[in-house]
Each structure stands twice: as C-alpha cells, then as structure tokens.
Image: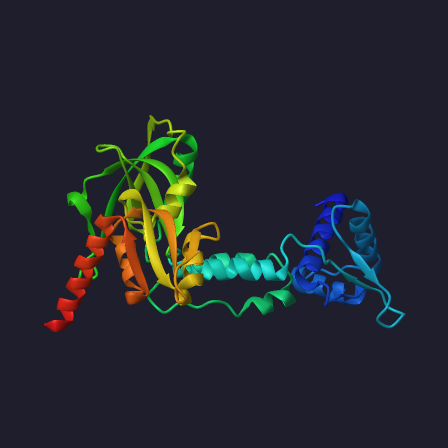
Length: 331
C-alpha cells in the first residue's frame, strides 16, 4: 500500500471513529483518538497526523467536525454532531420495527442493530429500551421481506402476480388454500392494518377487489402480464372504508354512539367525519363504509354503546349477530 492510499484510509478511519464515539455530549481529545485508532486497527499513528486529518475533514465541508476549547482551556476536544436521524426519530423507527408482527424476530434484531449504527455508540445505549411483544406473536415466515420487495416492484411496474395462499389449522400446521393452486392477482397497493401488511388487488378470474395478508402468501412470482389501474379507483378512500380488511359493498351508514366513544370514533374515521350531537348523552355520525363482517364485529365491540340506524340491511345483520351472541350464553 503506498503512502497516498494509507493517508486516505487513515482519514476514513478517523471519520468513522468520530461518528461512532462522539456526539453532542461526548468528545475526544487527540490523545484519545490515537488510542482508539490503535484499538481498532492495531496500528500506531502520530498526534500530528490525527490533527491534520481532523483539519482536512473540517475543511472538506462534507463532514462536520466540532472543535471545543471550553472544557479546561488547554486541550482541544473534537466531536461529530450532525446526523441524518435525531435520537427520538431512531427511537420511533426502532419501536415501529419491534412492534411489526410481520417481521421475524431475527430480522427485527438485525434491523434494530442497523438503526443503532445511525447514531453514536453512547447514544445507541439509550435505544436499548424498546417495545416488546409477547413471545410467539412475531411471524415465522422468513420470506416476508422478499415478498414485500417483489410486491412493491410489481405494483410499480403494474405487473400481475401469482402466489399460493393459506393459513394455520388447529394443529398449528400451515395449509395452502385451494389445494395449493395459485392465485392470479393484479396488485394495487400494500396496506398496514391491525399490525399486519396486506396486499389489496384485483382477483383476476372474478375481477373483484380482495385483500391478502402478506405473511400468509407463499411462492410469490411476478408475471410478464401488465395491467392498467383504473384511474377512478381511489386507494386512500377505499382503505379508509375497510374494517379489519374485510371486503364488501360500500354504503352510507349512520350510527349512534354514547359520548364516551367520541375519541374512539375520531381515531377510526378521522377528524373530518360528520359528527352531530343527538341527546345529552349521545351523538350520531354519517359516513361511508364497506358493509362486512369486519364492520359488524367492530360495532359489536362497543356493545350497547353503539347503535346502527341505517342502512336497514346492516341493522338486520347487527340484530342477527346480537341474537347469536345471546343464545351462545344461554346454552
């Protein structure tokens, strides 16, 4: 290795040492940088060389080097403080990755460790405390990340996909639907719902919109067949009307809730939902939603604190389910 290459390599090592070991609260002297350089490379380096490298890094304008004289007025302290992510932003990302059930436990740890490298060694210690899920709630499907990548590519290129789909039985064995026959789907979008990733797409044989949980998809392949997305199809609106990813017919609904559920309703339908006070203790909303088992089950969650007023078909479904529930506890 010639001298010029060695100088470039040393410069990169000094840069990495500043990124890893310094931040707004942690600084290093020239002497400490010399020691760290030896610990990481088992090679010695002079104080002048380190000082020259720090000057070159600072003058390059490409890497932030802060020089501090204020600690004792004698030694100079150096640090790198500018980073792509603030510590609170990394904490949000780590919590999102940790709580995502569709990511395997090993992949979760891998991603978290990579995110920790986006800050200093000292600040990374603050990221140890993170959201924990009960044991066994993470998916065991190790191909999920590859599936997501393939789906994004197919959506972008508007190419039809084929895959197998299934679910677990009472013996906790994964069984494929339709005797393992492939599904042919035009992929429209990926949606995050109830802590899982779903694919929304058009089931080609019947031309209807369906939803598939990505961790239950197997052997996903992108075909050469392309399609044109209907320009009138509003994906954001469609996703907003879904309840627990159940398909159905979109209708206008009117529901009466007790006042204690106001924030629950706003969380689910958004601030733009049409809310009207009704009595001293209740309010009513009017909105569009997909009439489905998902909607019925969500409404049953609130028991007598929610009452469907329209459409009549949904009222009858609520009556039927309420009667079934009553009989279940009479037996």
